[in-house]
Image (cartoon, rainbow, N blue to C red):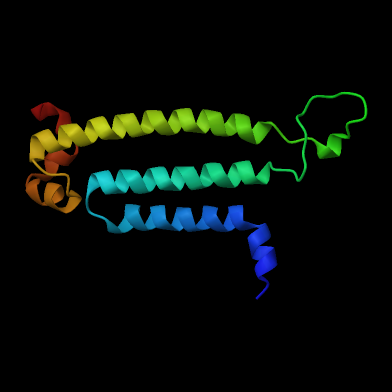
Length: 132
């Protein structure tokens, strides 16, 4: 196995590992807060992956001046996309945490299996807001 090549692409390896850890948390854990943490880990791994794609060895800022080759410039688009993604991720996390708070107030637990078991009437699934 060629470890030098894997070490050279360590950003991608770490990104995939983080994504798999987050996917495990989202699919296996019954607690909604743990699922949300797993979702945030997955988002972070995607951010790392996209920023790693835009990296250039010994790259320079994308400012055109005399003597600077455009092939040595770092692509600023992935960085701008990641800033937008971070804002969306924080907003999504805030909304999900507020929904978790409401679920805990109503059902007394954040375990998704217990919440689904406590819903006896199937018609509640379509209109949960009527009881608040």
